[in-house]
Image (cartoon, rainbow, N blue to C red; front, side, top):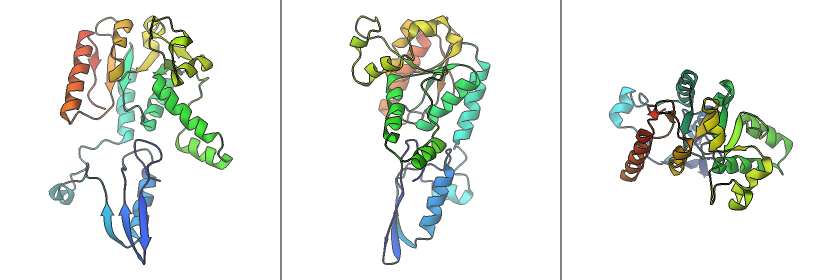
Length: 264
């Protein structure tokens, strides 16, 4: 096991005849579980490797490695937590947040900050389903495995008043279960969801997840200009497609006069 944005990431050491080949997979050493990565590095170093197979997104240049500057622009998850905390505690109105929807560390981070500042963390149905999938997977596991998982990832309880599911409008917009299919329909079983009407009534009580597919929700939310903050907690765009999507997002935010934070 190693640490990456998605739980379950792994690195491998293939041993044969006293030597080894190492496959790192994707990993990050600046997350909340850096000890997992350090443990893997220790085992890899002692395995007498002849080759290492890795992806090269963050491989530094020789000069920056020798000069010790290759970590200068890197922010840890604790940095993300600190900067997000500062933004949230200083803003009195509605706060929107965007992060990779399968990044469980970020989900739990913003959930904890919502609790700290007595806001309701309103997640998307997709994130609700993601968390629920982990819960269901643990149903048939041994008690020690369950305890270890909750020690690594303290999944929220659906009865917690600081966690709600934000339900977007469908069909006729009446929020009836018949309009929702699959995992979205399951939300009606927990009866812990909110709609744009709830957020609009008490915007200062919410930290609302909003991704690129939910931008039309801004029409229904329709906050007073200059009162809403958009926390940008995702990777800066680096491809042409990503840049186009970011321009689209910026246009929506500008239309509703929503402030956008620097990338956190």
